[in-house]
Image 1: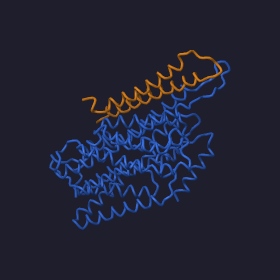
Image 2: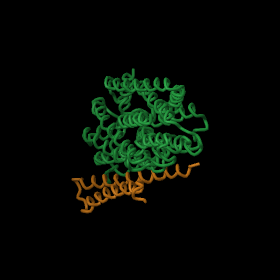
Image 3: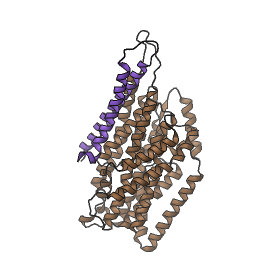
Image 4: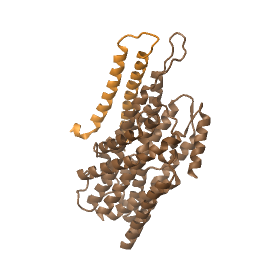
Length: 73
Length: 398
């Protein structure tokens, strides 16, 4: 039986989707905070949101890198 | 004969892309994140690229399901022809009746049915079918739904903003997810290319093996990959006009954050499964994600009746296409006359389908297969809207 492979798929799906969603959501949240007009925010908020988006992109590219057989050979 | 089967397989690939453009690109178009024309072109290109990424699923289809070559069982191009006919005819029937169905499962069903009728029970590798087709078919949508649920919860929890002093809700500012959807839906299109184009590659490879022009157990050749990639890309691109026409009739009630979570889960699930050679239905996984993310949003209840109807449709596809495939195989095995009858009937069906598709009213019920899953979720606040939507789709189906 290939239960192990099934568990692998479940695990990989969960890990990948949660990573991407959390990073992107954090980015969205930080952008929202940085955009607040009423209160002044520390200067690192907006750069940090960019870092989140960038990490999210890196996570996606890393996932694709793992999948494409061309790179793993 | 071989050329005919390859043409038929490529046509099947084309229709696959044609049907599924909407699954990937409907939500970002609906939320206005991306222009329809751009979205369709993007989906086509990504399907093309995706088809080149992996060949694991193709190997499952060509080497795993039917025992070929070395065991002394000879699968002939005629059997594969019968299987493809079964799949195409069943697809046409479900499409005309507006039943939700998976073209991938129709393909497998047709092939298995044709092999059983044409060669015998022993020709099908049931262990491999169970492991690589049936189990993923059951579990992948469940996994996708669970992951989409978690992701939707997380996305909402992380971006919910309250005033620290008064505790009242601030503007949530979740607009960023709209932009994010461009990327996630692109990933879904990419994943669709990797999984669905490979099924056709597997079929063509199987034909080449059965005709003796390729070693049993080897992967698809490069020209096969290229042809399948092109067929699905062209199919995706020509399917675009359906989406553009659909925009007027209003789409799934999906918020950007929710759509983002659902699409991320869909893409992750399909890509992970493709990597391990699981041949699953993109439509099933996307539907699972839509239901899962719907449950993750607050104030929603699942219409289990509708969800049950979708699942029944899924269960029905494999055996039904199998029966059609088996009947075609029996017809073909009677000789040249039977083969010609099957070929003429198949071609007629395809041409009829093409003209019917030009005439028919394209509403969200037949352009977006996942829409069915969207209706399985009831939004408490928008009950009236949901009900009217259900009624619309019922009217459209008459």
